[in-house]
Each structure stands twice: as C-alpha cells, then as structure tokens.
Length: 268
Image 1 (cartoon, one colour):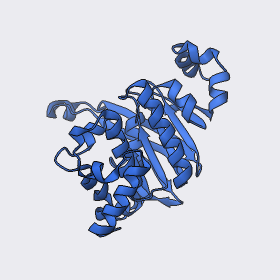
Image 2 (cartoon, one colour):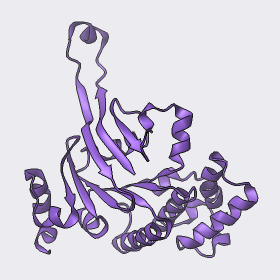
Image 3 (cartoon, one colour):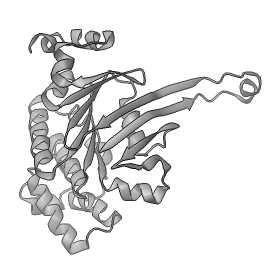
Image 4 (cartoon, helix red, strand yellow):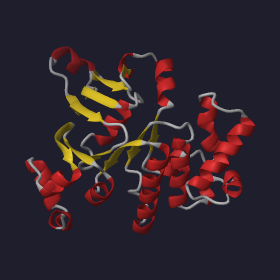
C-alpha cells in the first residue's frame, strides 16, 4: 500500500548573512535521514523511538504536510512526492492522520458534528443532509452515543478520551485506506488508552484499514503492532515482526530501549 524510499527531511539552521557568505558548511539538522520502509495492506506497522528521533516529522513528510527534501513516497503505486498540491489533496482522502493531542486539533468554535463533517465537504463527498447522517452513524460507531447528542456538542464539553474518539471519527469519515496515528493515546489515562486501542483494532477490521502507528511506548507497540520499526536519530535502525523485536533484538539501540522497559523484555 505504501512504499517509502530514502526519504529525507533536512533543515538548515538559519545563520546570519556574514556566516552564510564566509562559511561553506551550513549546519544541517537531519530530522529524517534516508528512511525506507514498506507498509502492507491491512497491517499495523509500529514506529518506535525516543522523543525527538524524527517519528512525527517522518509521518508528516509521508502525508506531504511538509514536502520532503529528498526521496519518494509511493501510495498505491503512485509517487505522491511528484504530484502538485491539488493532486496530493485528492490522495489525502485515502490517507488520514490521528494526532497526539485531540484538544489542539479540534476547532473549539465548531461543534463535534461540524468537525467530523468538514472532510466530507472538503473532498465533495456529501451534501449537508447526507453528511449529518454519516457523521451520526460514525459517532455511534466510535462509542459516542447517542450520536445526535454528541453531534451538537463542542469539543470543550468532552473528556480527553471522548475528544480522541471524535478525532478517530473525523479520520475515518472519508473512508481512507491508511491511517497514520501519531502517539494517539499518549495523553490519555491508562484505562482510557486500552479502550481507545481496542476500538481502533475493531475499526481496522471493519473498515479494512492499514495503520502506521507512532509511539514511544513499547507496551502499546507490543500490544498493537504486527511489525515494528525502531527509529533513532532520523534513521530506522531495525525493522521486524513484533515478537522478534521483543524476544531477539539485533541492534544495540533496540536492546537499550528494551532494557529501559525491563518488564517488557522479560515477559515473552
């Protein structure tokens, strides 16, 4: 479904004009440094690593929210890095994202119903009447019942777990094939985390979804993912089946990560 080849996201640090004139080597931050990976249809690939290793930058580069500085992203066999902005937007209907902080990405001035319906209008998929019907069905499907009631409410009236369910509903409303999940449960309480992850697994089956699941929490990755890619300093240092990564990690950095979470390393 998705093939990422040698993807790069390099930023040069802004220096003053004299420095730029006299110094040949500008300082470059390699947030994503030559990442290649493949995502099979229907699988959950976990992307793990410490904060600041480039996971979120990679996800935004895949979606072309920030155009990469090198490499290519092929989605369903089409190189979307070579497309113009309008063409990318058409593909984005099939690729949606769930962010870490639902509160920050839901407009407080829009009702829950308006927020979820918005992608349907952006992609011209429904009129107002159809959109309302679809949104209420989706609200019920993500466990926000009665849907009519939640449709009229504002994000500020909801708990963190409920807000994240709204974000999930909004991501699913265009019937995408790929969902990129950027730390989607890290801001939720442990009991709510489990509920949201179980909901996401149910939705994956029902809507035939493929997930790229970004997390720094190894327990969550182990529970949720079929394969895991370990990222460190902008590069993927190891990729393999979840069980293999946990029982027989090859790369010293992966071993170090697991030792920092000893409960996981011991329980096979």
